[in-house]
Length: 220
Image: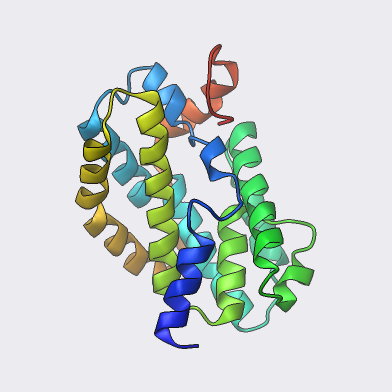
């Protein structure tokens, strides 16, 4: 596969228009805004950076990399799939990752691959993306960068709906975190399952507390 085809495929798979329903989920950000943990663009930037480098999104990147390697070598995806599901810290996060993973597998079956059969029972979002990318021969680091960028962009889009934050401020956040996305993608590309671990307690608690938020836009 040429670099251009790989790029186009990643743009398709991780576009906001790809039917995985990412716009339904805030990854706990809605609760963080309601609790005034995130009140402006600077705090939003810090929130996303922490999730990328030390939070649940870092773990997702490690799991994606493992699924990519297993699929690229035609190995058994069941262990990493089960691990990804077991590591989810709350009911809503489980809903978010499994629903998006299942939707990604269904939509990406337009590019039929053996992994679609091996994961026919569903898979967490990072495992689904990693497995399909690895089986397709899309480079790992580029896949990680696109996945992390999609996560960050979805957080910014959620913030635009939740806060008094204009489009220009949202774009500025995306520009500011470009180095973070590149660094985390490069680090995750070299990772193993031994590198799993997070330290974003406020984000995890926000994801748990969102279940009881009275008025909400997002499912998580």
